[in-house]
Length: 592
Image 1 (cartoon, rainbow, N blue to C red):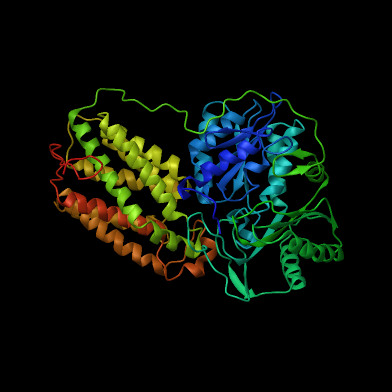
Image 2: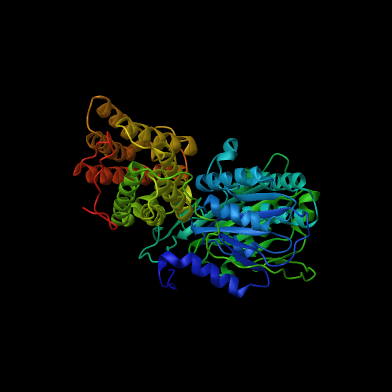
């Protein structure tokens, strides 16, 4: 179990601070992660890696000469926010452009993608190469849907060495793409891992069994099998990977036997000896293998085998020196330290109103802040339940992520409304804070949706009843446009669209706003329950579709809970938007 912490909510921040304190010769802290503390030549490509924390030495431990220029570190098993990615990449940039590389997970794709757009808009040329090495997560003809696990090390290493050699961004990108194309991984688990502060692991493997095809975020495997002997396990891993090898595979491979956190090195060495014999018997030459903990999953009892089929160029960069806190190869000349002011908090200035706030917009801002306080309370009340739902076929972090996001949003909204900000600024601040603090897919979706609602409200002299319908539409459109989910994918959208439909039906029929919201909330709750019969087609739960059957989607459930709480709060007050006479909702200093 993860036992050393004060407050579990501060685990990542405090662990990252300690990591920097222990490795200042390599890294410096910036908001969202770490960058090299040593000089990089002007014009060198900056390879920036990242994802959720809990995988050390990935990702922060791979920052240094010959490998990454920076690492973005989200919460445990949760993608970092777009703001964090942007700030780390900007700090790491040396003038040669940025290559972002990370595992193929929905939240990471959204947040890193938004940061890439922002960096490119500012003239920092930025590309992305996703790691898609996990053969258990999708068949070979759907390789683009595969998730990235321990094989991302091969992509990072090749790209970092190519950047160190002075290759330009085009060449570094193409080598990273080729390394990913020729990398395959398969993992197994003997028991699950435990999030800081949790009393139980995210999943258990029955005694005498082994879980095959696990993820690295605490997701259980695809199937369970009788616990094999070491020889049987070696045969299973090698045979499955060789069956999936790329069409252009040669006979020279890198083998990486990776421990996930609890398997002892002696066990790994024993297993690797058997793997080497099998690969050699198949006519393969093993080049500079790795055996140890490289991409972990907190305290998970498990391991994975990765194979990278080499060509001459990939072999050159795999074999090149690297010097980082968690991964070293060969020898490199010492690098000069550079002066850098370490930062651990957001440096961006808060946005200000561009025009004088109207009385109506300020009143709506106070209502929005009070409602967000109620949203926070609803999420806190159901945090454990949401986490349990998410652990069935995911990584168990939905409750934690939603709480972090809702708490940050409520605090930002409270501060903005106390300063007399408009509803537009209150919701924008709340959305930015939710995305920044929560990370993950839900953080991106809720953050974007709140900001869209704020833009739609605007800073008007008065508000009409029809504005409520426009807000519901804007919120929904933001979620569907960013997440790209459709009904039946088993996501938040499966509750959101029924909410919108029921709201519009009641609203267009003349119902007051509060009554229309109540109708929408009821429809969302029923729809969320109905997701139990669906198989997930997106996100981390997709490879575990069968395990998910019979259990509702946590994103749909959390949306329904929030919609219900908002509707209940407004039902007790005059919620007419005709003349902006909006009563306050109790909470966070608002008057009852």
